[in-house]
Image (tube, rainbow, N blue to C red; front, side, top):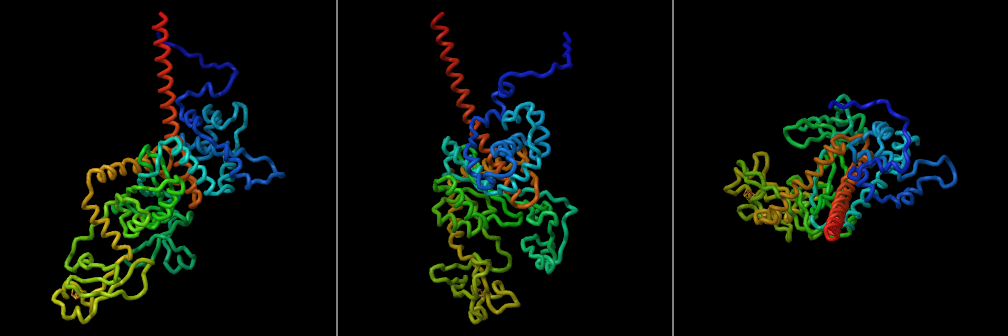
Length: 455
Ligand code: SF4
């Protein structure tokens, strides 16, 4: 029979808690079981006056509101507070009754400005420690990758500036507009922290930030996130990230996997120094064209000299470039008499010059090791792809990380920390929920057997 629902509603009276109206498997109900913010009040107490002014929003309420937004994918404060007006689960999660007035959305902005990004990093770090305590993260096998996040900048806000103007304005990190002529840079006028970058050669440059993410191998817990400008090279950040991961987890990393974007001599050296096994596909050098390639020159790191294919010695000349690149010059006397001269030395030079990174021996060892990769290494690298790239996909698809919500690097960092904290809390809550379901099933079984026995 066709049913009919009377849509006139009686005035709402409820007794008991809003919790009774929120399903047990709702994401906020699950996360509430594992979320402990009892330490937060002390953490931020120094930012508030103790004996003067209007009482501010409870810090726990503010963080719960923000986390609820990231967990439900409602990342904009205005939308979140509008949703919270009518969403019983959010009201219950932040501890507000049906008739209580929720904070204004602008309060969340002021709280972010007052606390700064490092307090939000601490919130994220607590979730990592909780995951380690629950044994769903070990911190020994770590997958590291970077992903671009589109800055909150419109195309109209991009401007092309002459290098001289940009340097005068001290805007040193902006993308080169014209790499050939080297005369112009494209800058974001509304968010100077964002820079032009692209994730592949076939895609156009866009204003972006770059998030470096480290994910644990066991259950995909995010161990570390940090945000840099879009154009920052992956290798530049790695040492600081390795140290930060070890400091957060309190465990020495045994194995780190990264993609070819990290295959720099500096990265291999950093991993060697920390005794971390590197699962990184070291790039092979470009195939030779007409010119004899640098790989045919052998670096003797012990004596700081290079031997060319005919056994002649090239010696270091000048200072280190950019902190790690050394030029080695052949003798013009040797090259003049050499039968390989036409393939080795350009017409404008008298002798061959090669450039080596001071960490080049580490790169050579990594290349040799790459050729010996066994089943275990290939398996780990396969896991790298779905572990860390999966986290980036999850963060962008479900938690709004595809685009920056606000402008400025600090705001972007806060977004990254809260997104990572939300993902970790989901992992933690899923484990606890699975345990609860298992226990409930066991209790049901026992009752069932007791009933059969007593019948
Ligand atoms: S041209 Fe000079 S650097 Fe090149 S192989 Fe001959 S001697 Fe060595």
